Amino acid sequence: MTEAICIDGSLGEGGGQIVRSSLTLSLVTGQPVVIENIRAGRAKPGLMRQHLTAVQAAARIGNAEVTGAEVRSRSIRFSPQRITPGNYHFSIGTAGSTTLVLQTILPALIIADGPSTVTLEGGTHNQWAPPFDFLQHAYLPLINRMGPRVSVELERYGFYPAGGGRLTVSIQPSGSLNGFDLMERGELKKRSAMGLVSNLPRHIAERETQTILKKMNWPADAAQVLEVTAHGPGNIVYTMLEYEQVTEVTTGFGRIGSSAENVASEVIRDTRNYLKNEAPVGEHLADQLLLPLAISAWQSGTHRRGGSFRTSPLTRHSTTHMEVIRRMMGIEIDVSRDERTQQTTVILRPKSSED
Image (cartoon, rainbow, N blue to C red; front, side, top):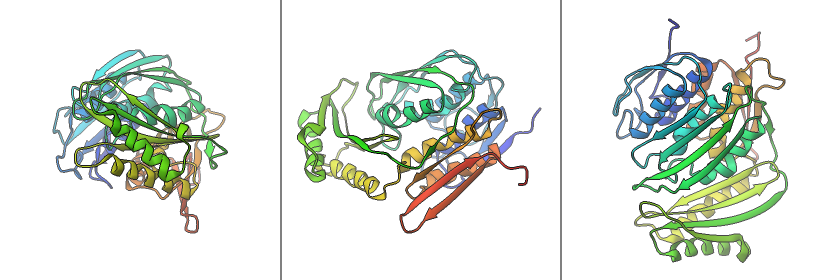
């Protein structure tokens, strides 16, 4: 039996990202992994329902043997076999994030030897997780640039705490991933603000989008408001900046105790920070790009491996993610920061024979 790599779940920010990344990398490399001290940095440590669903989904995709897969477990052992494409359905059973579960298994399925369809039920628009709109407009276009063809359909919205959302993903894999360099944004093609409400007054989303238009000095036709159907109340507002090479989606979540204007102001702040820094890759997209580019660097036989991108200063989430990738893949991740521009360049490449 291959000896498992041991990953300390208290590393860095000590959250669920360590679990998800370790599972993804185990699937891709075939390397068994033991994850200990799971979510040690959280108020309620151990696996929560959405993390358990990610473990179970990864186990089905990779025909894995798993021990410790239960709610509140602080240690699991995951031993994958072969990645198996097919038709899958996973239900979190709570408002836990479907997009985070998807991002655990998607990197393996885009290099599988056949197409897959994955249906996920749970939360589609959760605070502290990539919302569906980020997945659709910012993340998946870059995945498709690497060779696969991935499309996603939102069948039902799911807001916290009611959940009940449903999305379906169709995956045509490419076997190997072609890396890319994302160093410039290119020309700005479109800017827009979108407000969504479910089982709440429409004027909430209207106030949010109008606040954004006024403070950003955007034209009236840059805003759109949608009243959507979901199991419970929910509200999000986001801006979308579409450039030639990349799209940035910045989201704010409505919540009790915070006015529509305050939520919009949070989105405005983050949008302005992105515009001011001028790096093409926002801080959340940077975290999501690490895994596919790492797989490209790790794979052999591709005509172009690895890749690079420019981003704003890295979050602790991203630096923790890098440590797990280095540990499990043995690739090189070079990070350099320009103090003048406050931009960070990240380069992922195969480990050289001299290292």
